[in-house]
Image (cartoon, rainbow, N blue to C red; front, side, top):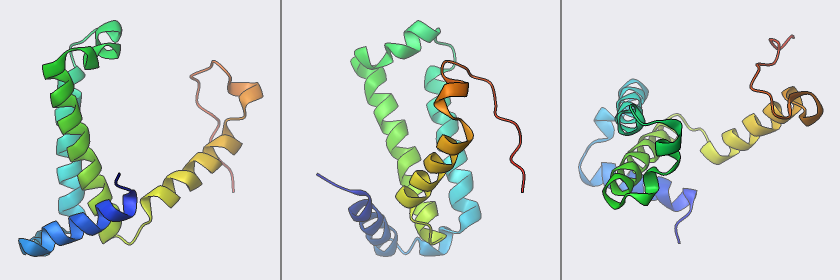
Length: 119
């Protein structure tokens, strides 16, 4: 089993072995991430909601989805590392803030946006 820390280390080693750190600027990594998200979207773009929910039942489609999710995770993890951001901590912090902003009593079953944050 792998964890976030081991993925960060593995990506650092992968880039270093290939002398790719020079290319792993925040801008380049963010652009690569956006490209990979686009490829993930392309896999789902023309599916109906029901088809998209069942996409993993098709072995070939599931392989493509897993590969694209892997690419997204790799670039997101590498970008966070290059910027010195603990990605898991940032996600927990964001979830904590969203939990305060979208209280269950008010937002249960609703897709509406919360009012802009003040202060």
